[in-house]
Image (tube, rainbow, N blue to C red; front, side):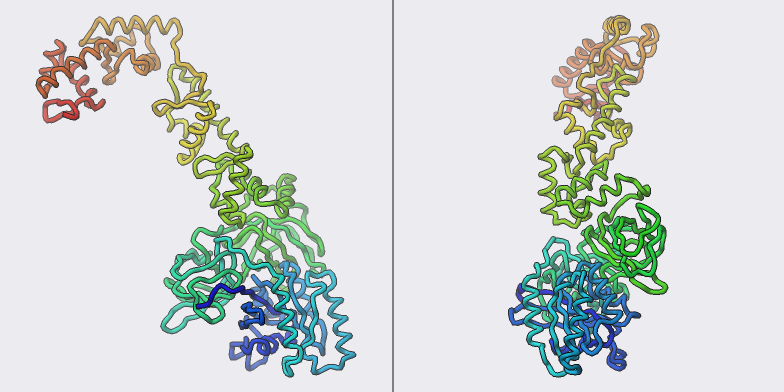
Length: 630
C-alpha cells in the first residue's frame, strides 16, 4: 500500500505542436496520448495523464492538456486543481496564440507556481534560442508566472531533462500542501469501466481524503455511491489524500451516469447553486465588453455550463475592467466560496473573463445596491470570523455551523471556533443547533415581545399565550421556538408556565367591576354545593364574560369539569375527599354510589367522575371507577 507521501499535480500548458506530450513522455516514460486518433494525428485532443516520483520522493501526477484552440474546454478541465504548471514553448517558434491564451487563463485561475520549458532546442542555434527566451520573458511580464524559471530541453535527445526534474522538485518544495478540510471533492475528468471492477472515475482530489467504504454523492445528479477501491499513482490505497490524482472505483452507478464535469463529494458537503455572486476580471484582449444579461459559458472545475451574467453595478464591463456580478446558472452547480472560474463566449469561441466565487447561496439582488456591493467587496479579504459574521447577517432565522462551513468552504472545526468567538463576543447567539447574528436574534426577540404584548392587550385575563399560538403569531419555525423561549426566559424577557408564555410584567387581574361580579358568582356556586347552577345561566346572571370564567378556572377559584358545569373550589375539594375515602375503603365506586355519596344527581356526578378520570385520579373499569395505582 502507498504510504502518505507528499503528492502534487502539475498541468501542462502551451500552443499546439510545441511538444507538451512528448515532454511528458520523456520525463515519465508514459505516453499521455491514449486515444487512437491522437496517435494517428500526432495531436492531443483530450486530457492525458502520467505520473513520476522525483528525487525527493515527491509523487507528481501530470495532466497533459491539448493545445489546439478547438479543444480549449478540455484544457480548462485539465488545469483545475493543479499545484504548478509546466508551460511548454517550442524554441523554433516562440510564444504563439494559444500560449498567450493559456497564460491568460492561468492568470484568471490564480496559478502562480510554474516553470517554462523551451522544447526542441536541438533544432535551433544558440543565438536564436536567446532571442526566443527574451520573447518568453516579455510574454510573462505582468502575469502570475512572471519570473518563472526558463529551462531549455529536448525530448528527443534528453538535453535538460534532469535539470527540469530538479527545478520541478525545488518548485514543489515551496508549494503549500493541499489542506484537508474534511470536505473531499473530486471533479471528474474521466470515467470508464474496468472488467471485474465496474465503474472507475478519475480526477484531482481536493478538500479532504477518501477512504474505501465511504458513502459519497455524485453532484449535481445527487446519485449516492460507495467507494469500492482507490488508486493513486497506479497503486492501490486504503485512503486517498488531497492533492493527488485519484482513481475511484464506485459501486452503485454506471459509467454513463458520471460524465466529465460531475463532482464526487461527501453527501451534504457542498451547496448546489443556481445563483452565484462573484468578482470577475475581463481580459485586456477580450473581443468585446461583458454586458448585463449576456449569456456565456461558465467553466468551473471540469464542468462547462451556460450562465446568464447579471451585472450588479453598471451595464457593461470593459476589457481590462474588474467588477461584481451574479451568475444565474442553467441547472445547479456544486460550488464553494473561493472557487475560481472562467467565462467564455460561445461564438466566436473566446475566453473573455474569469474570477472567484464570493457567495454561492445569494439572494437575487437589486442592481446598484450599495450594501450588496460593499458586502461583496469585503468578502474576498475577510478572515473566517468576519466572513461568518457577514454570512450570518443573511439568515434571519439562523443557520447551523455545519451549513456555514459548507457555504464558506471552511473546515467545520474552524467554523465552530469562529462561531464560539462570535458568541462569546456578543456578535452572535446560539439557539440549540442554530446560530443567529446578534441583530437577527434581537429582531426575533422583538417579534416575540410584540406578539405577546398584543395578545395581553386582547386577552388581559389570560396568564399567557399558548406556545403554539406564539409560534404562529410571531412567524417562528417550530424547531427554533423552544430554544428561543428558553433563551429569552434566561434573559428575563419572558416567562413560561404550563406551556403558556407571557411578558414578565404581565399580571392577569380583574377590574373592580369584574371582581365584584365574579365574587357573587363564586358565592352562588358555593351555596349550590354538589348541585351548582348551570354555568351558562350563572354567567348570564352575573354578566361574566368567557374570559372571566376562564380566569376564575385558571386561578383555581372554580373547577370547570365540562362546558356547562363548574364547582366552587371548596365543594370540588370536598367531593374529591369523599370519593377518594370511599375508594380507599371499598376499592370501587359507581355513578349511582357517587350520586348517593354526594347527595347530588347524575347530571353533576357523571361529569365530575369523568373529570377525575381525565385528571388521572381515577380509572374507569366497566361501570366502576377505581383509584389509579391501586
